[in-house]
Length: 188
Image 1 (tube, helix red, strand yellow):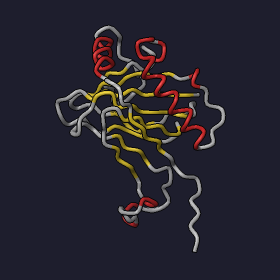
Image 2 (cartoon, one colour; image 1 turned 30 degrees about the vertical axis):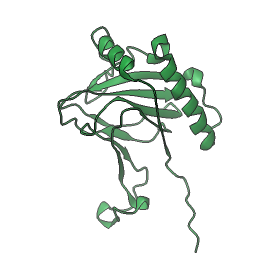
Image 3 (tube, one colour; image 1 turned 120 degrees about the vertical axis):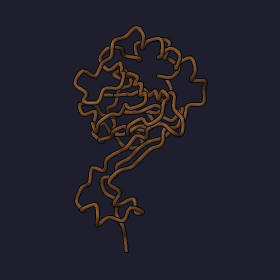
Image 4 (cartoon, one colour; image 1 turned 180 degrees about the vertical axis):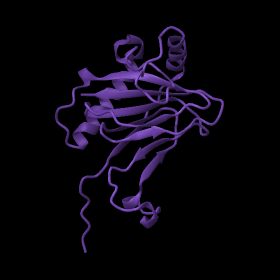
């Protein structure tokens, strides 16, 4: 018998080892100066999508270098030859109690990412939706990753996730009174 895994959905994970507190402080200061973006979003946590690109702020250079290095590694590993780190852009999202983000993708990009800048174990999970929808959910074995409909990722401060931009994902409702901050990344 032979199993052939075709068309895998890959999520890359790595961890930043440096001090994140200066970046958290900077984002909190920017929140008071920069208007909220994401005008076409249904659920609207505070974000700087289309209002402030972190990749153009030299303060974030060390963090962006970390993102770029990992994007280069990930894109080579999955066989994507034409990802340019020069086309990267990023914004931050601030989730407070009651905030969430609907399922969406980042089409028109190649590689996207989520970086957990500030989070704790009680914060909202990120959920990735399986692109394969052939079986009714009551026929699936929830313990077999071949039939998972969703993949839930706990927010761990310093964790970087990278994935193909067409992979749908969402953020569950933030149930606790804490500030969950993520940085979203897109590469063309």
